[in-house]
Image 1 (cartoon, rainbow, N blue to C red):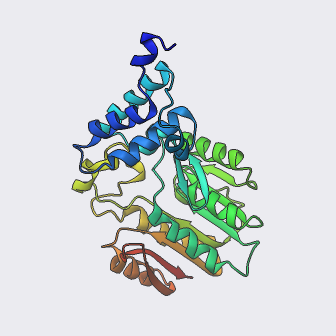
Image 2 (cartoon, rainbow, N blue to C red):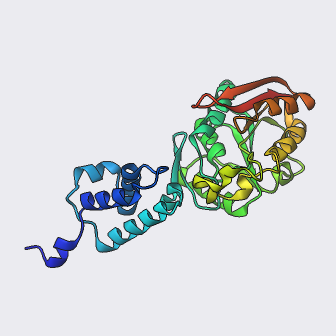
Image 3 (cartoon, rainbow, N blue to C red):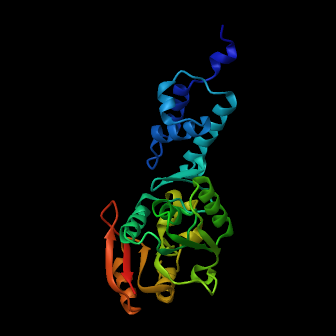
Length: 289
């Protein structure tokens, strides 16, 4: 016979209903969906388990943890930081507040690189500003014979990237700490391709005070007064690190495509091309040296 404590313990269905109500006043949140993600995370199950066993009653400790996460999400904390994970281009990454949250738009950068290297499975690739390792590890997953290096100025970020590589059981990726190309040893050979999702938001952009950006590392987002400071450095210096006919691929803001074209032209690149993301916004520019 159920005890009084059992009767008071909320079921999965009741917890989800409560969380959905708590989150319903936030227009930037998907209340039911995100409640399911958080509860599945706490219970260490798939979302389908929640649908199959709505009457099941989690332990009091689990219920309390879940409701704490719901309150943190209501306060604006990114759900990816609360769950500590993010799916990206067929791999799942562990993340925390030391790294940028990988986004679907960046998959365009990876897809383009893979398409260009279709007939060069052993290409030498460099990922600048790797963060959680999202781009480098997605490429290692898709191109297991490639020789991949990656840099980041943040040592905590590189630790997460290597942890992700090991968890995913991917081929070795050479991680180097430092600012852009200064991280590379002097004897490093040139690359067939350099890819980067660098900071590209202007210092005083109001978007930095909105949504997930408020909680992400600013050094991974902000690049000078016009958002192009780091992109200028990469375009200027990449030419000396690329083999003849090597390709540089950069993600950027949707309003920066024309500026990147001009920068590429100024530094002698050719075959310059803008590519559009899922929202049909110019998001990646590529060029050859």
